Image (cartoon, rainbow, N blue to C red; front, side, top):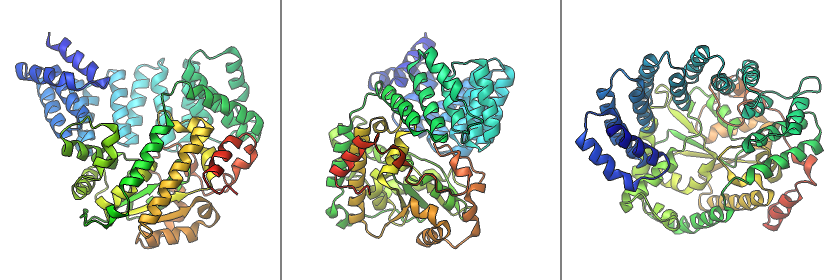
Length: 524
């Protein structure tokens, strides 16, 4: 049974098992080249191997084998997106939506992929169509709410959240989304509703986390710090219980990067790719990276691509290609990174961005905070790229991180001691990059931006070699979607209310302060 074997392959690949199923998939497509399931299975194997061009080839064969079914087009669209062929992906996905126009699940699936392409208006349209076809399913209106939030349509998003909750009161994530859409007030908040939910009990572990985070946020809005932190700590403690994470692994990685990318590494004659297009914005989350992204992205010569994991993925791929295996032992990964062909990595990065960029705009922003790990490799691969690091008061940074629910990202953020240890390692590596590349990373303080946006913006544009434009002062009018935790904040002018906010929680944050001070970090 070809279909049954293909399903078993897909199940294995999606659970992270690759090596044992590769020969099975290859045998299946060799014996049944005209079966769409066999070709899809092979395509997803190649996705798992990060060989996206080969994945596209097999996905196209699946389409040829079943041209009137939407799913092969979905798989092809996914493969094209992975290969950064975004224009082609959008065309294919529109075909999938056309073929699946009466199937709300298919429309929602396609909508998700359009959202990943950051074509938000099309994603919203498909989620709304799915909701219209199945108005009693809360999932579709919930997706409408999330997309409206990314687009800055907060009143409409709140209305959609309320619709989702009315359909199913246990849509716990929606409560958290709704609380973050605006600043709550004494006259208009959801505290009584959220407290009532907790008194009755929330059986779903993750759902309880969402409700507690929502309640903590609303109490903070109402300037009730004790009640806010009580619920925040309960939320973080609850969430941390289910995370399999060892901060020591990350700390070792930081040390290995510092040891590997030392002065001798930068004194070598390493040729990079000569491109001036990219602007990288790095820094810990919640330090103002999105604010600065929006300021720069409001310039007529710059287009923001959002948070792209592309550079890291290309480094990993380059290591795999050099070693001939995709199972490089963890203890060798950083060292092997220093051996790659950096010029090829830089070229692959810029070439890969062509399919997502606005071709009429010469510069683009890659705003992935985690790229603070890659500052050295980025400079070696793209020596003419601009790198901007956001700096914010350590305690404001850590408190802002602690009070944000990141999902699967930033697992160090739910325990104050682990957060302090991680931040200290981050502080150390950024000091290392400053020592190694003193003139190649522009450091800008969040507090300076909110205190004097125009002057700081002028200095920043000068570093980026961009002419001054008044539009950067009205970044909040930028209509481009924002998919970050700051999606609501970046729709407003600069405000100072987040500066020194940690002071209201100084007693509760003592374990964090102790770690930072122990590691020589000034928190005055």
